[in-house]
Image 1 (cartoon, helix red, strand yellow):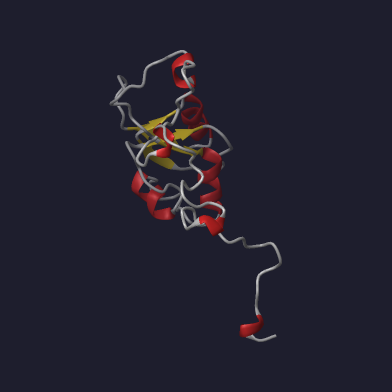
Image 2: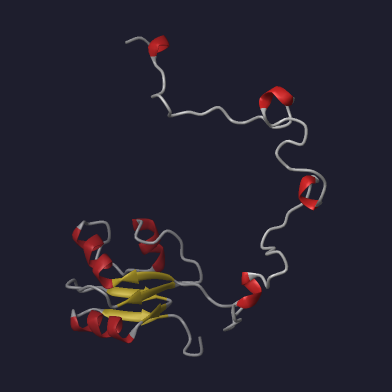
Length: 156
């Protein structure tokens, strides 16, 4: 087989319909848009219009409230920290800060801080300093002989 012999499988490609290209094309003159009316004109977008019926986005109830200044935390589980320590990507003897977690590749970016959750198990004795942590995570780190300190204030 040579390069010039390569071709797609039968039925894999289909030529696109070029509308408004004369009567012989089968989609000439009005280009499949019918005659007159709003939809035959150019520049008309009728998204979510349901022909006089109440549109779906108006029928659904409005609920809740989205806080405009809410904080987004990057979430890390204890099991993942342990895995990175086992893989020698994080040094458990040195203090584990947010910058260390980012540098190791465990967290892509800090966002408004990093929050540690208790999923998984931490066996290594480690000192961790992050923005926030769940109660279970703090207990698990202390049980392993380490210390977890948070820099976030209690009000947040």
